[in-house]
Length: 326
Ligand code: XMP
Image (cartoon, rainbow, N blue to C red; front, side, top):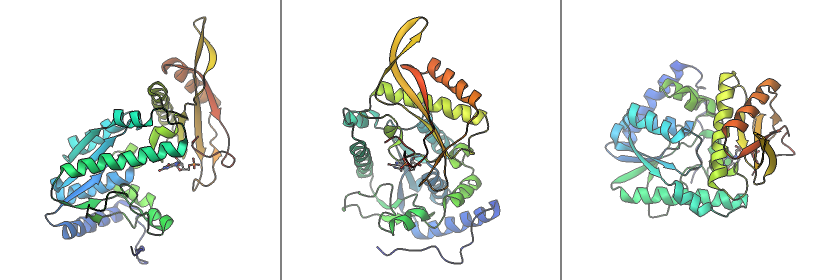
Protein backbone atom coordinates (compact mmCIF):
# COMPACT_ATOMS: atom_id res chain seq x y z
CA UNK A 1 0.00 0.00 0.00
CA UNK A 2 1.13 3.49 -0.85
CA UNK A 3 1.94 5.59 2.23
CA UNK A 4 -0.07 8.80 2.35
CA UNK A 5 1.39 11.77 4.15
CA UNK A 6 -0.23 14.68 5.93
CA UNK A 7 -0.71 17.56 3.49
CA UNK A 8 2.07 20.10 4.04
CA UNK A 9 -0.32 23.04 4.28
CA UNK A 10 -2.56 21.35 6.88
CA UNK A 11 -2.94 23.64 9.88
CA UNK A 12 -2.41 22.23 13.40
CA UNK A 13 -5.78 21.80 15.12
CA UNK A 14 -5.33 23.67 18.39
CA UNK A 15 -8.61 25.51 19.00
CA UNK A 16 -12.32 24.62 19.19
CA UNK A 17 -12.90 26.66 16.01
CA UNK A 18 -10.30 24.72 14.06
CA UNK A 19 -11.69 21.48 15.47
CA UNK A 20 -15.19 22.44 14.35
CA UNK A 21 -13.94 23.23 10.84
CA UNK A 22 -12.24 19.81 10.74
CA UNK A 23 -15.42 18.11 11.97
CA UNK A 24 -17.59 19.83 9.33
CA UNK A 25 -15.12 18.97 6.59
CA UNK A 26 -14.86 15.34 7.70
CA UNK A 27 -18.61 14.87 7.94
CA UNK A 28 -18.95 16.00 4.32
CA UNK A 29 -16.01 13.80 3.24
CA UNK A 30 -17.38 10.77 5.11
CA UNK A 31 -20.81 11.19 3.52
CA UNK A 32 -19.20 11.47 0.11
CA UNK A 33 -17.08 8.35 0.66
CA UNK A 34 -19.72 6.17 2.28
CA UNK A 35 -23.04 7.28 0.73
CA UNK A 36 -25.70 4.82 1.91
CA UNK A 37 -23.08 2.19 2.74
CA UNK A 38 -22.65 0.52 6.11
CA UNK A 39 -19.57 0.89 8.29
CA UNK A 40 -18.14 -1.37 10.98
CA UNK A 41 -15.88 -0.07 13.76
CA UNK A 42 -14.08 -1.80 16.63
CA UNK A 43 -14.71 0.65 19.45
CA UNK A 44 -12.35 0.20 22.38
CA UNK A 45 -13.32 3.38 24.20
CA UNK A 46 -9.82 4.82 23.71
CA UNK A 47 -9.66 8.37 22.41
CA UNK A 48 -8.88 7.51 18.76
CA UNK A 49 -11.67 5.01 18.14
CA UNK A 50 -14.09 7.11 20.20
CA UNK A 51 -13.45 10.21 18.08
CA UNK A 52 -13.90 8.16 14.89
CA UNK A 53 -17.17 6.77 16.25
CA UNK A 54 -18.48 10.23 17.19
CA UNK A 55 -17.59 11.62 13.74
CA UNK A 56 -19.29 8.73 11.97
CA UNK A 57 -22.39 8.95 14.15
CA UNK A 58 -22.73 12.58 13.09
CA UNK A 59 -22.07 11.73 9.44
CA UNK A 60 -24.08 8.52 8.89
CA UNK A 61 -25.96 7.77 12.13
CA UNK A 62 -27.23 4.20 12.32
CA UNK A 63 -25.33 3.07 9.26
CA UNK A 64 -22.36 2.83 11.61
CA UNK A 65 -22.17 -0.30 13.74
CA UNK A 66 -19.70 -0.17 16.62
CA UNK A 67 -18.45 -3.40 18.16
CA UNK A 68 -17.13 -3.12 21.70
CA UNK A 69 -15.29 -6.25 22.81
CA UNK A 70 -14.93 -6.65 26.56
CA UNK A 71 -11.93 -8.97 26.89
CA UNK A 72 -11.94 -8.77 30.66
CA UNK A 73 -8.74 -6.74 30.73
CA UNK A 74 -10.31 -3.28 30.69
CA UNK A 75 -10.16 -0.85 33.56
CA UNK A 76 -12.97 -0.58 36.07
CA UNK A 77 -15.98 1.20 34.57
CA UNK A 78 -14.74 1.28 30.96
CA UNK A 79 -17.23 -1.04 29.23
CA UNK A 80 -20.07 0.67 31.13
CA UNK A 81 -18.83 4.08 29.98
CA UNK A 82 -18.66 3.00 26.32
CA UNK A 83 -22.27 1.79 26.52
CA UNK A 84 -23.44 4.92 28.35
CA UNK A 85 -21.74 7.42 26.04
CA UNK A 86 -22.34 5.77 22.69
CA UNK A 87 -25.53 3.76 23.05
CA UNK A 88 -27.42 5.84 25.63
CA UNK A 89 -26.24 9.38 24.91
CA UNK A 90 -25.32 9.29 21.21
CA UNK A 91 -27.91 6.69 20.22
CA UNK A 92 -25.32 4.68 18.30
CA UNK A 93 -25.76 1.21 16.94
CA UNK A 94 -23.50 -0.59 19.43
CA UNK A 95 -22.87 -4.30 19.74
CA UNK A 96 -21.43 -5.16 23.14
CA UNK A 97 -19.58 -8.47 23.20
CA UNK A 98 -18.92 -10.00 26.59
CA UNK A 99 -15.88 -12.13 25.78
CA UNK A 100 -14.43 -12.13 29.29
CA UNK A 101 -14.58 -15.88 29.93
CA UNK A 102 -13.33 -16.66 26.45
CA UNK A 103 -10.19 -14.53 26.87
CA UNK A 104 -9.46 -15.57 30.43
CA UNK A 105 -9.89 -19.27 29.57
CA UNK A 106 -7.43 -18.91 26.66
CA UNK A 107 -4.96 -17.09 28.90
CA UNK A 108 -5.16 -19.54 31.80
CA UNK A 109 -1.72 -20.83 32.74
CA UNK A 110 0.12 -18.66 30.15
CA UNK A 111 2.93 -16.76 31.85
CA UNK A 112 5.22 -15.62 29.02
CA UNK A 113 4.54 -11.92 28.29
CA UNK A 114 4.77 -12.02 24.48
CA UNK A 115 2.64 -15.17 24.31
CA UNK A 116 0.03 -13.42 26.45
CA UNK A 117 0.07 -10.43 24.04
CA UNK A 118 -0.28 -12.74 21.01
CA UNK A 119 -3.22 -14.58 22.54
CA UNK A 120 -5.00 -11.33 23.43
CA UNK A 121 -4.38 -9.76 19.99
CA UNK A 122 -5.28 -12.94 18.07
CA UNK A 123 -8.42 -13.61 20.08
CA UNK A 124 -9.52 -10.01 19.61
CA UNK A 125 -9.39 -10.39 15.83
CA UNK A 126 -11.31 -13.69 16.01
CA UNK A 127 -14.08 -12.21 18.17
CA UNK A 128 -14.36 -9.20 15.86
CA UNK A 129 -14.35 -11.43 12.80
CA UNK A 130 -17.18 -13.56 14.25
CA UNK A 131 -19.28 -10.46 14.89
CA UNK A 132 -18.52 -9.11 11.39
CA UNK A 133 -19.64 -12.42 9.80
CA UNK A 134 -23.00 -12.18 11.57
CA UNK A 135 -23.65 -8.86 9.83
CA UNK A 136 -24.50 -8.47 6.18
CA UNK A 137 -23.93 -5.71 3.71
CA UNK A 138 -20.97 -4.01 5.36
CA UNK A 139 -18.45 -2.75 2.85
CA UNK A 140 -16.55 -0.25 5.03
CA UNK A 141 -14.28 -0.72 8.03
CA UNK A 142 -13.52 2.37 10.14
CA UNK A 143 -10.35 2.61 12.18
CA UNK A 144 -8.78 5.02 14.65
CA UNK A 145 -5.48 5.18 12.80
CA UNK A 146 -3.63 8.40 13.71
CA UNK A 147 -0.65 10.04 12.02
CA UNK A 148 2.06 8.60 14.32
CA UNK A 149 0.75 5.10 13.46
CA UNK A 150 1.44 5.86 9.80
CA UNK A 151 4.83 7.46 10.46
CA UNK A 152 6.02 4.77 12.85
CA UNK A 153 4.99 1.89 10.64
CA UNK A 154 5.91 3.31 7.26
CA UNK A 155 2.32 2.77 6.21
CA UNK A 156 2.48 -0.99 6.67
CA UNK A 157 0.83 -1.37 10.05
CA UNK A 158 -1.32 1.72 9.84
CA UNK A 159 -4.44 -0.36 10.36
CA UNK A 160 -3.59 -1.24 13.89
CA UNK A 161 -6.94 -2.09 15.42
CA UNK A 162 -8.14 -5.05 13.47
CA UNK A 163 -5.24 -5.59 11.09
CA UNK A 164 -5.09 -9.32 10.44
CA UNK A 165 -8.69 -9.93 9.40
CA UNK A 166 -8.92 -12.74 6.82
CA UNK A 167 -8.51 -11.79 3.16
CA UNK A 168 -12.09 -12.62 2.22
CA UNK A 169 -13.18 -9.44 3.97
CA UNK A 170 -13.05 -6.84 1.29
CA UNK A 171 -13.56 -3.74 3.35
CA UNK A 172 -12.80 -0.28 2.14
CA UNK A 173 -11.06 1.57 4.98
CA UNK A 174 -12.47 4.70 6.59
CA UNK A 175 -9.80 6.54 8.59
CA UNK A 176 -10.93 10.10 9.28
CA UNK A 177 -8.22 11.00 11.82
CA UNK A 178 -5.27 9.41 10.02
CA UNK A 179 -3.49 12.74 9.52
CA UNK A 180 -3.97 13.96 13.07
CA UNK A 181 -1.52 13.91 15.94
CA UNK A 182 -2.77 12.76 19.34
CA UNK A 183 -3.17 16.28 20.76
CA UNK A 184 -5.29 17.22 17.75
CA UNK A 185 -7.48 14.13 18.16
CA UNK A 186 -8.11 15.27 21.74
CA UNK A 187 -9.15 18.80 20.67
CA UNK A 188 -11.53 17.28 18.11
CA UNK A 189 -12.89 14.82 20.71
CA UNK A 190 -13.57 17.64 23.15
CA UNK A 191 -15.39 19.60 20.43
CA UNK A 192 -17.46 16.51 19.61
CA UNK A 193 -18.67 16.52 23.21
CA UNK A 194 -16.93 13.37 24.41
CA UNK A 195 -16.36 13.23 28.19
CA UNK A 196 -13.05 14.56 29.52
CA UNK A 197 -11.99 11.24 31.00
CA UNK A 198 -12.26 9.72 27.52
CA UNK A 199 -10.60 12.62 25.70
CA UNK A 200 -7.68 13.17 28.10
CA UNK A 201 -7.22 9.54 28.99
CA UNK A 202 -3.68 8.37 29.75
CA UNK A 203 -2.11 5.82 27.37
CA UNK A 204 -3.42 2.30 27.94
CA UNK A 205 -1.79 -0.72 26.31
CA UNK A 206 -3.83 -2.83 23.87
CA UNK A 207 -3.43 -5.96 26.04
CA UNK A 208 -4.86 -3.88 28.88
CA UNK A 209 -4.57 -5.03 32.46
CA UNK A 210 -3.25 -8.34 31.11
CA UNK A 211 0.33 -7.00 31.15
CA UNK A 212 -0.15 -5.66 34.69
CA UNK A 213 -1.26 -8.98 36.12
CA UNK A 214 2.24 -10.41 35.98
CA UNK A 215 2.74 -14.01 34.85
CA UNK A 216 -0.22 -16.33 34.36
CA UNK A 217 -3.42 -14.30 34.81
CA UNK A 218 -5.76 -15.44 37.54
CA UNK A 219 -9.17 -13.90 38.16
CA UNK A 220 -8.41 -12.96 41.76
CA UNK A 221 -5.17 -11.14 40.91
CA UNK A 222 -6.81 -9.49 37.89
CA UNK A 223 -9.51 -8.11 40.20
CA UNK A 224 -6.78 -6.87 42.54
CA UNK A 225 -5.16 -5.02 39.59
CA UNK A 226 -8.49 -3.53 38.51
CA UNK A 227 -9.56 -2.43 41.99
CA UNK A 228 -6.17 -0.97 42.96
CA UNK A 229 -5.95 0.85 39.60
CA UNK A 230 -9.38 2.37 40.24
CA UNK A 231 -8.25 3.60 43.68
CA UNK A 232 -5.04 5.06 42.24
CA UNK A 233 -6.92 6.86 39.46
CA UNK A 234 -9.52 8.18 41.88
CA UNK A 235 -6.84 9.58 44.18
CA UNK A 236 -4.88 11.13 41.30
CA UNK A 237 -8.07 12.83 40.09
CA UNK A 238 -9.00 14.09 43.57
CA UNK A 239 -5.51 15.46 44.12
CA UNK A 240 -5.11 17.26 40.80
CA UNK A 241 -2.53 14.83 39.38
CA UNK A 242 -4.66 13.39 36.56
CA UNK A 243 -3.50 14.99 33.33
CA UNK A 244 -0.25 16.11 34.99
CA UNK A 245 1.39 12.71 35.43
CA UNK A 246 1.84 11.02 32.04
CA UNK A 247 0.93 7.47 32.99
CA UNK A 248 0.04 5.85 36.31
CA UNK A 249 -1.25 2.43 37.16
CA UNK A 250 -0.83 -0.54 39.44
CA UNK A 251 0.70 -3.96 38.90
CA UNK A 252 0.18 -7.20 40.79
CA UNK A 253 3.19 -9.55 40.69
CA UNK A 254 2.77 -13.30 40.95
CA UNK A 255 4.26 -13.82 44.38
CA UNK A 256 2.93 -13.56 47.90
CA UNK A 257 4.44 -12.27 51.11
CA UNK A 258 3.48 -12.41 54.76
CA UNK A 259 1.52 -9.72 56.52
CA UNK A 260 -0.64 -9.15 59.56
CA UNK A 261 -4.25 -7.91 59.75
CA UNK A 262 -6.34 -7.71 62.96
CA UNK A 263 -3.69 -9.71 64.76
CA UNK A 264 -3.87 -12.54 62.23
CA UNK A 265 -1.08 -13.62 59.89
CA UNK A 266 -1.83 -13.21 56.19
CA UNK A 267 -0.08 -14.51 53.10
CA UNK A 268 -1.20 -12.29 50.22
CA UNK A 269 -0.25 -10.41 47.04
CA UNK A 270 1.57 -7.09 46.88
CA UNK A 271 0.38 -4.21 44.68
CA UNK A 272 2.99 -2.10 42.90
CA UNK A 273 2.34 1.59 42.22
CA UNK A 274 3.89 2.90 38.98
CA UNK A 275 3.63 6.59 37.99
CA UNK A 276 5.93 8.02 35.32
CA UNK A 277 6.57 11.13 33.30
CA UNK A 278 7.96 11.01 29.79
CA UNK A 279 7.85 12.87 26.50
CA UNK A 280 7.88 9.96 24.07
CA UNK A 281 7.76 6.79 26.24
CA UNK A 282 11.27 5.90 25.03
CA UNK A 283 12.74 7.07 28.32
CA UNK A 284 10.79 7.87 31.47
CA UNK A 285 11.24 9.22 34.99
CA UNK A 286 9.42 8.22 38.13
CA UNK A 287 6.86 10.96 38.88
CA UNK A 288 7.39 12.77 42.18
CA UNK A 289 4.33 12.25 44.36
CA UNK A 290 3.56 13.79 47.76
CA UNK A 291 4.56 11.16 50.31
CA UNK A 292 1.38 11.74 52.33
CA UNK A 293 -0.65 10.88 49.23
CA UNK A 294 1.37 7.70 48.69
CA UNK A 295 0.69 6.72 52.31
CA UNK A 296 -3.01 7.41 51.87
CA UNK A 297 -3.13 5.27 48.72
CA UNK A 298 -1.27 2.46 50.52
CA UNK A 299 -3.85 2.58 53.33
CA UNK A 300 -6.76 2.45 50.88
CA UNK A 301 -5.33 -0.37 48.77
CA UNK A 302 -4.43 -2.56 51.74
CA UNK A 303 -7.83 -2.11 53.36
CA UNK A 304 -10.07 -2.09 50.28
CA UNK A 305 -8.49 -4.56 47.86
CA UNK A 306 -9.09 -8.24 48.57
CA UNK A 307 -6.06 -10.49 48.82
CA UNK A 308 -3.50 -7.67 49.14
CA UNK A 309 -1.37 -7.01 52.22
CA UNK A 310 1.52 -4.91 50.94
CA UNK A 311 2.12 -1.99 48.55
CA UNK A 312 5.41 -1.25 46.79
CA UNK A 313 6.28 1.96 44.92
CA UNK A 314 8.34 1.43 41.77
CA UNK A 315 10.63 4.48 41.45
CA UNK A 316 12.83 3.03 38.68
CA UNK A 317 13.42 5.16 35.56
CA UNK A 318 13.29 3.79 32.01
CA UNK A 319 15.96 2.60 31.33
CA UNK A 320 16.72 0.32 33.16
CA UNK A 321 13.07 -0.66 33.67
CA UNK A 322 10.32 -0.45 31.07
CA UNK A 323 7.20 1.51 32.00
CA UNK A 324 5.03 -1.61 32.08
CA UNK A 325 6.14 -4.67 34.01
CA UNK A 326 5.74 -7.04 31.06
P1 XMP B 1 7.15 0.17 27.92
O1 XMP B 1 6.61 -0.78 28.93
O2 XMP B 1 7.70 -0.53 26.70
O3 XMP B 1 5.90 1.01 27.41
O4 XMP B 1 8.15 1.14 28.50
C1 XMP B 1 5.96 2.17 26.64
C2 XMP B 1 4.53 2.63 26.38
O5 XMP B 1 3.87 1.70 25.52
C3 XMP B 1 2.73 1.15 26.18
N1 XMP B 1 2.70 -0.28 25.87
C4 XMP B 1 1.88 -0.87 24.98
N2 XMP B 1 0.92 -0.36 24.20
N3 XMP B 1 0.47 -2.51 23.34
C5 XMP B 1 0.20 -1.18 23.39
O6 XMP B 1 -0.71 -0.73 22.69
C6 XMP B 1 1.41 -3.11 24.09
O7 XMP B 1 1.63 -4.31 24.02
C7 XMP B 1 2.16 -2.23 24.94
N4 XMP B 1 3.18 -2.44 25.83
C8 XMP B 1 3.49 -1.25 26.36
C9 XMP B 1 2.94 1.40 27.65
O8 XMP B 1 1.71 1.45 28.37
C10 XMP B 1 3.67 2.72 27.64
O9 XMP B 1 2.77 3.81 27.50
